[in-house]
Length: 150
Image (cartoon, rainbow, N blue to C red; front, side, top):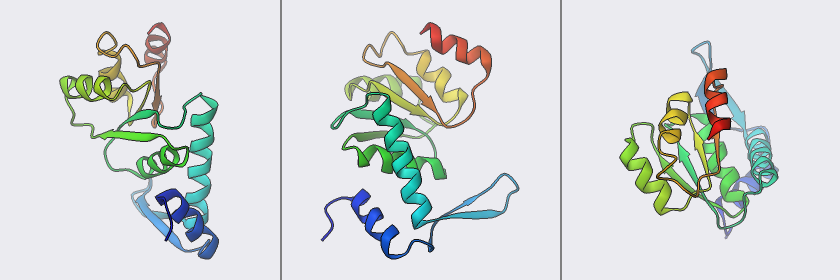
C-alpha cells in the first residue's frame, strides 16, 4: 500500500498519464481538465517553489482559499515536501485567521486572492512568525508595495 497521497499521485501519473484527474471551470466558463501527468508536474513545480523559498519538512503552511484547482495543487505540493497545510476558506474572519495561523506558527501563508492577502496583512502584529504570503491571483501594485513594507 502506498504511504502518502503524493506518492499515490506519482504512481497514478506513471500508470495513467493521460487520464484526466481534475476538472475545473476556465475563464470562458467551460470545463477544462488536468491529466495525472499534468497534476503531478504542477505538484512538483509547486513543491520546488516552496523549497526554493526555504520552506522545510514539518513546517506548517497556511492555505487560505476556497475550492479551486490551485488549492489541490498547492496542498499536494505542501505534502510532497513533508510540510503540513493549515487550511481555511475565504469566509474565515480575521479573528479566525489570527488564531489559526498563530497557533500553527505558520511562517508562510498562501492566499486565494488580494482580499485574503489584505486580511492577513492586517494581522501582522498578531502573527509574529509569518514571513511571507503567496497569492494565487495577481495582486495590484499598491498591495505589492504594502507587502514589501510588512
